[in-house]
Image 1: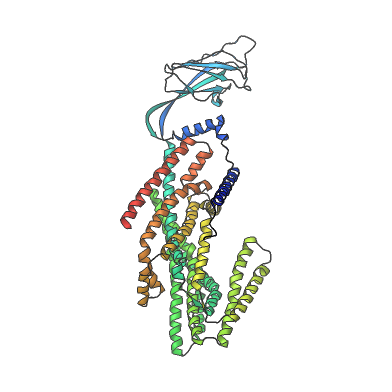
Image 2: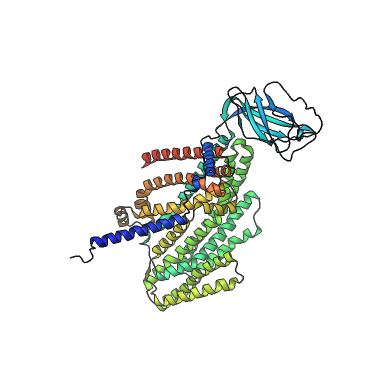
Amino acid sequence: MNDNKLTPRGNFIRTFLLVIVIVVVFAYGFQVTKINLEEPKEERRQTQLTNVIRALAHPDLTKYETERLAVNVPIMVPCPDTQFTLPDLSQPGPSVTLSAECAEPGSEITVTGTGFEQSDNALIFFVPYKADESDEVQLPLSDDVEIDEQGNFSHVVELKKDRTSENPQKIRVVVNRRSGFPMPSQTVYDTIEKIIETVFLALIATTFGTALSIPVSFLAARNLMIQVTNVFGSLVTVIAIAPIGWFLGSWLFGTIGGWGVNLIVGGEVPATAGLWAPALLLFSVQAMASRGSWAKQLTMLRSYSVGVLGALGVALAWGLVAGLGQVIGLGLANVLGPFAFLGNFLFVISDALAIFLPLVGGLAGLFALVSLAGVPTENMLLRTGETILSKAFVVLMSILAGGVLLGLPAALVTWLYQLSNPMTSIGWPAVIGGALMGILSLAVKVDRPMPTGMIAYYTTRTVLNVLRAIEPLIMAIVFVVWVGIGPFAGVMALMLHTIAALGKLYSEQVENIMLGPIEAVTATGANRLQTIVYAVIPQIVPPYIAFTIYRWDINVRMSTIIGFAGGGGIGFLLQQNLNLLKYRQASVQMIAIAIVVSSLDFISAKIRERII
């Protein structure tokens, strides 16, 4: 017998209480969201809604050549005490008469027109007296006045209360007549320009975001990273020396690459450049001085020298290419005329090469120094085991690693909040981190395996989750402050969000691949990089293509939103028209967005059918 089974009465009470809870939750939800069905019933709101819907249903797609017809009729405001004579302002064509030749300020008169065309809509203005007619102003007295089938109209208007004169003033009826064939309106041309900007904004953001998210996805794939381990001593050594590698690589590449750029762009190289060759040679000789026999020293010296000089040669060549591209790009932009964008493209790409040279150098220096120190350290510790010397070495590296792990975040906080005493705000966290890691190293064996891959996995996942939680609209606001209002800010915002979104989708696809090909490739003795190239990538290419195309579709729609924050594209134009209550123009942009999104969906479906 099941003692937990409720009786029918118990079931009824539980169901009743559940219903009560649901009702209370939704009732509070209505209160929080301020749902009020009485406001939509107000006549004023219904009128406003009707006007907006009618404007949206009548998009500003076409325009006509217009012929402006103005008919003036004189009037005295106020009525003079003596007899007066009004000037004759009649002209051939339609005529306008007033119910009185004079009237008091603020009074009503009837304006009657005859001889107009039925398709015309008339506007009535009050024109105050001006001695110089070129200075005349038109004060509106009515909205569009409909003309009947006979070409007549009659409309009552109220005169201005503060416009009086001893001289005759005017009531002016203006009619703008359409002529010729309909032509695309200026709104259509503006929309086409912005929708093209939107498509390419999304394309560039998707392209660069995809390129950066692919390597990130491997770091965020659990099945790949769970197998990556390092012994404790090697891990703390890598952490301790990683900043040194980054700083040296960034500094060397930035300096030597800068020489290449300056040589091409400015035609000069700093005088200190000549001192680097002997300095590098002495550094290499000193580094090899204590290693084995002379033959081995010379061999290692040659290998290290070739590697260092090769890397520096790459940096110099990179700088030369960047400088040459900038010079050629500017030259082409000045001579290509309508195709100047090609020269600008070359200049921007070359400028990006120069800007990212220190970053590339930092990554190269980091990986080079980590490889040179991490692998030998791990092999040494696995070979020697727990000895006094190895333990002392690991404790020292642990202290340095602890200082790095807490010192670098402390330095970031110090810079961010502009703390007044950097020595204290950075020094104490570094000391505390070093002390904690030193104590930890005493309790951990030097050759204990550490889950390095999982550390990288959780770090990457955390960063991706944080970036994905921030809407592109917020990112666009930040980038607008940095690079200014325009599509460039939108590209950067969408690219950053694309990296976060595709990094997650790609990594999950990697986690769902079949293990058979990986085991087969690994059994042949392939290293980790070869395993990824030959066993992982072939399985993920089709879904990666599908996700990339889908992300482009998403970025096109997102660009509409980030335009509201100044991120360029069709959204920027749509926001302007909505703020100015130009709903007919906004309707054109909405139609363009719908057409582009539908077209991209159709095209992407066809591409997926052919590729996947």
